[in-house]
Image (cartoon, rainbow, N blue to C red; front, side):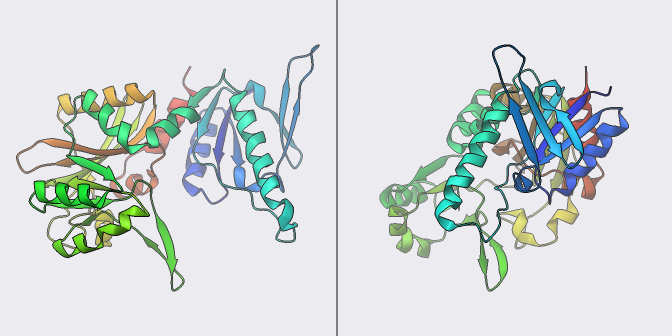
Length: 322
């Protein structure tokens, strides 16, 4: 019987499908657990007793998979359940809490599988403040950074860096405006923005020195493999944040890192205990490399598509290796 890889994701995750096919091509079975389909479309039967080993069955239609025997787990995404709209709102929050708790309990009960990556490590790596300190420990140069809700501190930071400052959020933020989704991008702080800093009392923000760019680098890491691409975002709408530049994703091209910087990447991943991560780095005009952030669940399919890098194959290798 083929060994099994469990993939925790959601039903609209198309890139996960590429990894599923690559896993099957290696002779393994792949169980895709779309968390938004549980409990309405998917079932779990978790049984425990003093006399017998536990049984954690995943049931999808006629398919039954014993999850205690999975070889490895890819923690890709966790989405909330799609519950029927007719469900009494008085019980909706309780239902969501019980769903999340049961799934978290199941995932915590699979310690013998190889995880890419363990959930607690993924969550730890999400936090931007310790991220920068660990990057520094790994040997990276980091930008001067201030995270605050203190307007006076933000003004002092702006002045100390001669107005060459950007601001960003601690989380990826999007909202709907006139029916279309809008993202909050990294933006330059201008003098007139200082008049609006009192809003920090209600919502903290991150301020960073603006780092001069030659190119912006995206580095996808899978184990010891680095997939590196860069884009020249200078002089246009994407100069501060390449994502604002519209079609700049189509202009990424393969790149490399000096050996010492590549070693910094590997040291940082080791400090976090992660197999997969997506790093943003700036290469300055004088050839220095400045760390911006690492996303432990960063998207990679667009990079694979634009630059032709076999990232899904590397993920399948990592999930099926002995």
